[in-house]
Length: 328
Image (tube, rainbow, N blue to C red; front, top):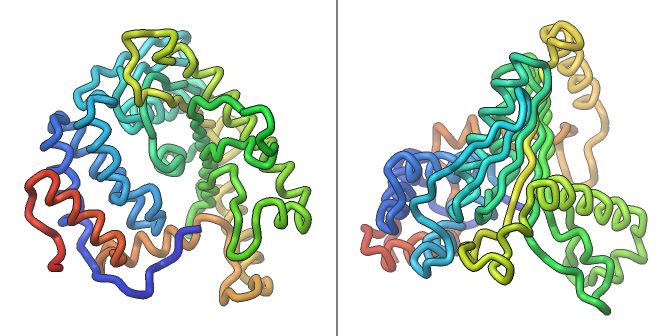
């Protein structure tokens, strides 16, 4: 679970974007692609989802330097119908085809009511919420999920069968923050409790997440065609291109007046806010509110960068001969 660090230095989103863009340019990424992935990663940090933000730069750039991920992919779109498409990521980062797929899904949903696309032949696409949220501005509901190639091993516990696949739903509101579920289908050990011990306490939760992970793997994996690019079966495949995604959008106006819908969402949120908070929390909110509040505030005062996060970014700077963001 992502939490706000207790020890940190604030950094403006513009400065962090510029650093991120420069890092990707240094490993051969095109100007437009470097700007896009910088925007997406910093957006993720602004929401406090640090695990999928700029801390990933080190690993992403190293995969490109090691020639495991294509730094200059040519994304190919095959429209299979007026409301469906397949985006081939050409062995690059998943952010590029997934962003295009989300754009396609929203544009076609506005024209036809619903639309969806799959992406394949790419590496990590980051947090799913980046793509589901793209539907909100058009009064659409967005959904995004992804999966990577993995083969369940005989003898391994079924408690790990979800594959930790990410998924996100985004639902627009009126004056209140949008409702956004942005999560991984995984329950890990917590503190002193192992997965097995957690299972003894909450077995139903594990079974639900195993099911959610399976659905994500079917949609963002098998339907996307991720096994078509297994290097063992395809000698031309990039080693890191082990992931795919499914992204769709639904136009609310095809079912009812969007403004009335959003007013009811607001009213529901107001009722939720009057409920007793969960133990250890001082507010009652639906998913998405906390990320929305952080994004609004941190865009003004800067993103809190933890000590480990600072070390990661400085390591990237040293590796790529960029100016250090933080003093030692």
